Image (cartoon, rainbow, N blue to C red; front, top):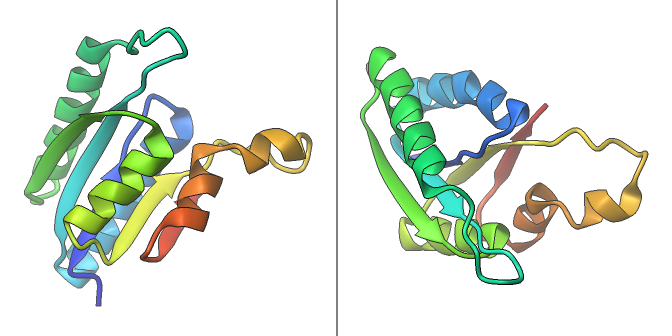
Length: 131
């Protein structure tokens, strides 16, 4: 059913919690896995730590390898939600699995601007959000 799964990973606890669910889904559906990390630029064009992102990608790839899963890694620079959706289209992803920052109902404005919410609204494939 899900031949290609995109797993955008970031430096949040929620994203790291989504990793086991992603492994289970890949195994269940015998999917091709692509791990994506987006190096975000701020208003001044300064990028978040590229070294931290590279380390995170390597840690995720190692986790999946220990589960017997081969994964492709992609690192991109840009606006996270748009980049995630662009990569999903490029690789013909059937599913995007990502963590939720758990904003709940406390701050509706922040929740509406979250990367997860934007991906849900922009993606051309289903998005599975873990908490």
